[in-house]
Image (tube, rainbow, N blue to C red; front, side, top):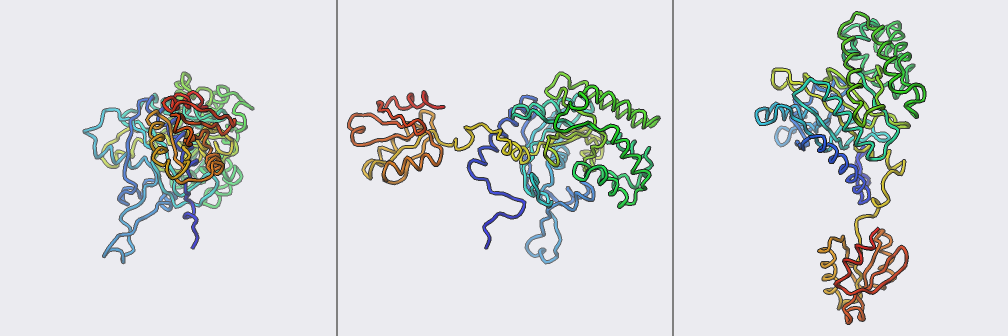
Length: 456
């Protein structure tokens, strides 16, 4: 029997958990400073709550839960693991509408599940770090979201990310002007959403395979080529952000012509760019008409975070003014963004972006055990050190000090204490620095102060 976890899932060892907690602490701190409040929802939902919200492609990726007990033989599903955190939010807003403020801003950091094909940075079980604002159509919301997620990435140490920005109404206008029939818009968006993985030639082939005319495909791809944002490795390699956005806006306005929804969408995009000038997203945004985001519930601006050498994004989101209304029977404006915790950790690990103190940083000092008779004293000393704010481990059995030191070093514990016969008789404790090799004998009552003074 294999002991490996199910494909697309992972076990998290102590250093893995510490890395995750490091990222989550920063995410939570930034989100709360932007006025977002915490929310948690169940791991599974009623299946009808999820089906039909993510398009045909998304429906295939939902993990369904079969009916239980006497209904199990039917092979039917009545529950499903949540696919994202947005639909559960919409349900919560509908359920608790009278208890929530006029403008409800929430963040949610929980796992989601997708029956996807695992790949680098792509898992079947993964955490999302969401922020959403419900109740306003103002583009200030989009600007605030982009400012928050950009600040998170900057604080984590990312300096080469780009924010891709598009609008679903602009995509509709582009498809119409290119000659793609309305019934084929869904297929076209699914194909376009694969652009970062299969390239422009691949998108043309995908269009043809889905029954979209080659003329329409060529027209649309030509627009995308003319509005490309340049090198991913250097967001300003071909054009600086302001120059690119101004040129692309002009190109797009010229292409959509009198299609008013398309013109309004271009104006919305330029407004969002201007509003973010005073935020951490300033200079990082590129209007990118090739961005599709396959989720069918988006109604307005859509956005993604791209970094070099990563197929896919670190996160994305957009406006979805109709989703909550599905549950309430009236339109409720909403906009959100989701950061992918796993992808962030993968990239940070590969780039060695985590602070050195993260790895093996779980224990400050280990109390050694001199002999069987000193067990009580060792536990008492550990208690004193813990009350002093230190993280303390106790070696559980008598052993040669060399072996105890080796064990502490293997766990990256910086200090060990020794309570030998002489130390106990004199009321002292010996403290050894395992990195420098220095050892000092200090009064037991001063051990906490000494260790705090030597901590790195």
